[in-house]
Length: 133
Image (spheres, rainbow, N blue to C red):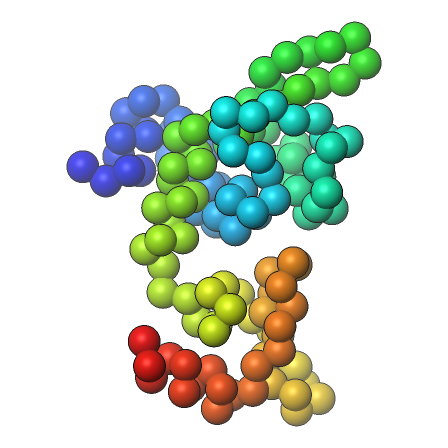
């Protein structure tokens, strides 16, 4: 049984699984592990702060405690596992291990669109790396 089937059966839902897959790098690199609580204020990543509300709405992030002046959150373990499986099984397009890219019209090549990476690769560099895979 796939991890998405297991997560769906355990209540995460297809929307949560799809969101976790679509935001795998963000979930795995910019949020704490599921066993750690966090506050929005403690997140280093602007992208993590910006996506927090959406991930809560999609059940990827859980509100674990409501304090007097703030909330504490944790990453849903099922969503974390779905994100981890998605990243392990994806075929990255770029040598940096990410899949999103933006074509730079100035002739420099392609830039990784993951906010914390932004490495630039030329077409031949990508082709050579892909041929080695």
